[in-house]
Length: 82
Image 1 (cartoon, helix red, strand yellow):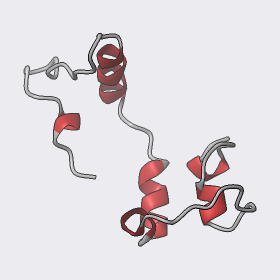
Image 2 (tube, helix red, strand yellow):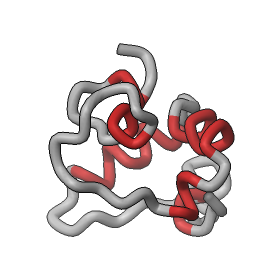
Image 3 (tube, rainbow, N blue to C red):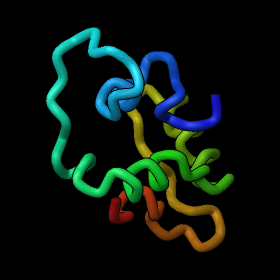
Image 4 (cartoon, rainbow, N blue to C red):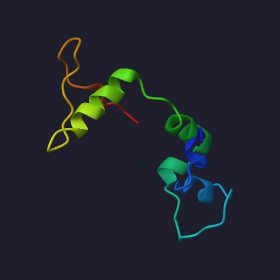
């Protein structure tokens, strides 16, 4: 599996008509409006620093992203536009 639409439990294959609908689903127009752009964004590999930051946040009792290590600024994940 290399893309979100190939993931066994993803609804993307169903929404794209690549597999039969198992459960009734309504496509989110914000995500599905520009499907090529959405799939490109979803299948994009996050950078290593963001992956590490999320891993650390998941170890806390309450999920909280730590400031960036380089300059102690708020994590870009806190405000990055989708």
